[in-house]
Figure 1: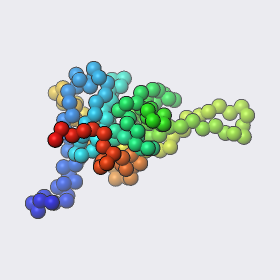
Figure 2: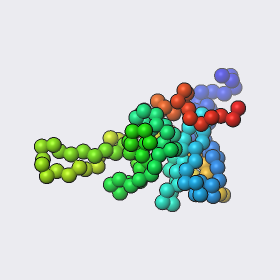
Figure 3: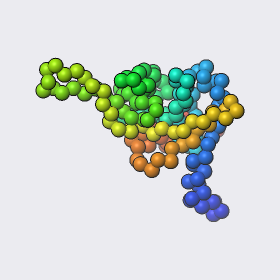
Figure 4: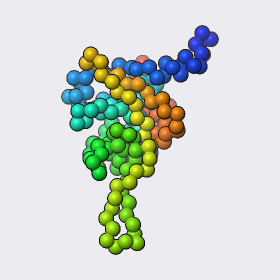
Length: 157
């Protein structure tokens, strides 16, 4: 490590915004992938809003950038192409359907597993899309697959 750069400076750098592309491009494609401070993310444009999250699914590392967006219980979710896990674009919550087996007239209800996928901030400035990594201090299940050997974006170097 560079002796002139403190750990605190390095941590601050991780939370600076990074330009990942042009607004026109993501609106056309509806999604894009990027590496932001060594963390792979997928950025979605859906129903007029931008969302960014870790690229690999919290459950088994499935490639979320290849999943379909569907609405469940009024929430837009990315559906992991590997195991069909549903993750809300807005909060990163995992959704599942539950039913009371003791009630014969019960209908399945959508429930939350809690936040499982780390969500990042997307901003637009002068036609450019910027992603700022989450500063939330909690451990998120998707953190395990976010870097290292699980990377899916090939670097150009």
